Length: 319
Image (tube, rainbow, N blue to C red; front, side, top):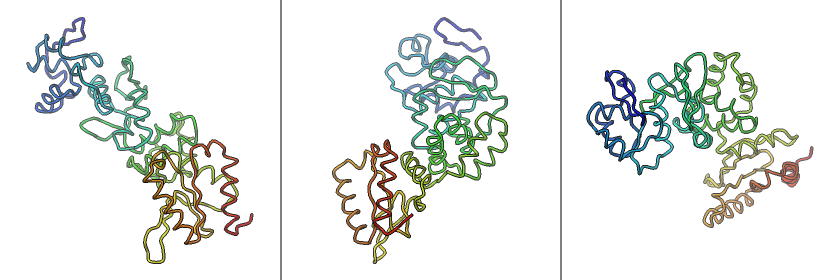
């Protein structure tokens, strides 16, 4: 196998890349549709000439190319890193979270770097982080790539986040949209005893609530749970006397009919504001006190707790 100054490799043995190669049709499709591919494979099979590779394509990582005009999506960025890593590599942490469908932390962390494990350490190019774990993590296949299991992904995601609140939010999100479960996370953590950060993840697990629909909802729930106020449940549905759904409260207490609604950016749109106002009016008719909470209010936790306390007291609760 020989490598020239441009990092283009000519293979003496096609088997060198066969294990990481997609199907023949899929490979040709990748080359001509702007997806990442191994330059050596394109040369070996005559899909491209060396001149084509040098003039019409650009190198994303050593040996990995893409059409010169292509703008890589998050998925394609991950695939390019996986091709660079080679056979036996396993995508992990935020990268695996993105591929398993987690909605918040995966994209954020992939924007920083694609994380993966490979059988033998190789200094990665910019944009890739290689984890130096002693053994291959348990994995599943996603799009032909090896990815850590949802439970392992949740653990790795949480132990990389310094803030306990964000770590719980990541666990919540993996359980809601990333196909993990608290039981599976605990069982996987038991097999990782002694690994950095795993004991902390186990300590956070009792605070996990798969019903939380955003990191900010998690933050609000944890803040309220640390007070002496009555317990608030996640995603409390309120129906009218005809059994019609009036609202699904982010947090609610049925006994005292108090709810809290976190308003993210989507609630600033006129149509959504009108819908929220109607919902609040209908909740009031049913005897509920359900104030709305904004991101700015989360920055003043003492005031926010007082705000929630006042709602309970208006409903007759006393400490």
